[in-house]
Structures are given as structure tokens and as C-alpha cells.
Length: 403
Image (cartoon, rainbow, N blue to C red):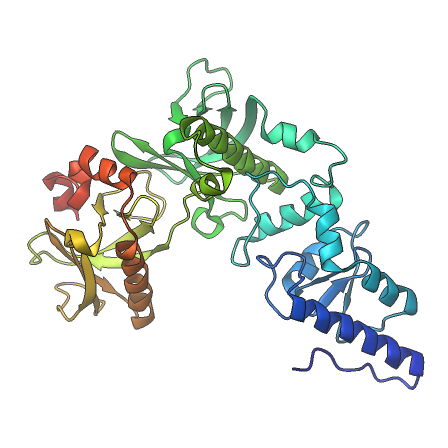
């Protein structure tokens, strides 16, 4: 392992400083004391010499957006003066984290390495520019947890691709999210209960860097809203306000559970999304290309005609192996389809056959489906299966005909 190469220089002091920064770098790497281990890949090649932290290449670019707060140097290529080396020695990632992440609310989303840029960017702005978590003031935390949170967003039409401005009102009083089709509307277009709501960032799907997908149950089917805001701080603030309201709702409905048990339920991340081809219930129908979404939290595989559809064409409940659910590779030939990497999903009521375009896609789908099948079913899973029998295997026959 060679963390850095010494900068070519005849100065003994320069060489010593480079040795010192390399030593700090190795210590940081060995101790995994990154700015946030969940955010940075290793090893980091950059450091903020004004904050005293080591960062990765991607985050060094985000830190450059804070010129008045954070200035970065390359560990490998730049020279390090005595004062900077000493500052890095005094500070370091653990010290900075103790200062800038002192009071992070339980509901606040800490971005992961694979998350979209706007989440990482606003996390860095919140920590170092706005100093939201130092304990100096609780203004922003009061905003996230306020009784009412209002925001005007661009929302995609249900049956078209046009985005129009809509007013969204998040209420902690009755644990709902409302949106209005007009500014002067007294009645909301929809009232969404926190019980069934989830919000995840989907910039590629929405076609905007700040794209957010809001999903909820409506008449036993999933309803998707696709929204964005031009300002990254606004959309991430709404996202965290939704998480704060969801947490308050879950705390009320599950008073015996700890926050650590509730936090994973605040956001329902998709385990796997993408196109596959599927055939109908007799397996003699032509294969048709569909967009699939798999969520491990509710154990359902949803399929849509297009990624931005408001509602699904069908839903498959996925139980455990002990309940006669299984998944395997399939050699079934695709009738009318173009793809040939097959998957067979066996349920008590029906056998589903899907086709993937590439072998890598098939492996990823098999891994994701097996992961859900291997998870023990919760009481909520059993209740979902019983209360929505149409969705347990697939939607009603009229939906099957559209498959």
C-alpha cells in the first residue's frame, strides 16, 4: 500500500511535511476515521485543510462549492506547509465529526456512498456551511419538525409528461401530506397518510438532479408522484421533513419500539429496479417489456408499462420458501420477446416467467428476489397478504390481460 508519492523537492522540510501528511493519511485509513465512513470510498486522496478532514475525490468537488468554509488540497500532488500539517494533526476526521455532527436528529438522512449528488451536497452544506448540527442553534431542526411545512414543487402529470407547479403541505398535526392543483384551491387534490408514504430520490428516473419520487397506497394500489425543485436545499429539506413526520407518526403508533428500530422504516428504498420482459398467466402470451420495482420492506414486486407511470399494472407478493415461494434461472424460450436470460418466480398461485436482457441483470434480479424470500415474514407482512388478496399473486384478471 502506497498512499502518496513524495512531491519532488530538494527541501528537507518539504519532504518531512509530505512524510507527516502521509503518516496522518495512513492513520486515518487504518482507523477508518473518514468524514463519514458511509459516504466516502477508501482510500481518500484529498483533504480539506481548513476543516482538517480527509475526503474522497467526489466530495472534494462538493467542498469546492464552499470556498468560504472549505479549501482542499491533494494528498498526492500538493505541497503541505508546516502550519497545515499541524492543523491536520490537531483536527482530523474524528474531531471534526464530534463538532459538526454533534446534534444530528435521528430522522435526518445521512447519505450513503451510492446516493445521488444532491443528498451528499446538502449534507456537506448542512454540516459545514449552515452548521445545523453543532448545537449552536436549532433553527433548522425546528423547521424540519414544524407542525406545517409548505413547498411549491414541479409535479409530473398523472397521464402526461408535463411538469406543473403544485403546492405541497406537510402536516405533523394529522400526519398527512396534501397537494393542491391551484394556488387558490381550498380542497387538496390528494391527502396522503404518513402510514403509507415513502419518498426516495430518483434523479435519473425523473430527469432532474433534484428529482424525488413520492409513493403511497391508494385503493390498494401504489400511486407514484414525481416531483422536483430547482433548489437543492428546498427539496432535501422537504425530504427530511417527511422523514421527521414519518418518525413522529411511527413513534405514536409503536410507542414500545426504540428509534433505532423505527429509523429503517422511514424511507423505503428499492432493492432493485429495471426492465424485464414478462408473459401472461398461461405462458403462451407474447413477452412484453415492463418496468419492475422490488421493495424488500413490503415484499412486493411491482411492474409498470413505463418507469414514470402513476400506478402499476400488477403486483406480486413474495413470501418465504416455507410458504412455497422460490426463484430460479429459466431456460424458457421468449415468445415474441428479444431477451433470453430467463427467471422463474414460483408462488402458491402462479408461476411467473421473466426475461432479462443481460446475464448480469439476471444475476442481480435473482440475488434481490432471493434476499426477499430469505427474510422472515413479519406480522405486517401477513396482514398485507390477507388484507390485499388480489395483490398476493397478481392483480385481477383484467390486469393480467394487460401484462
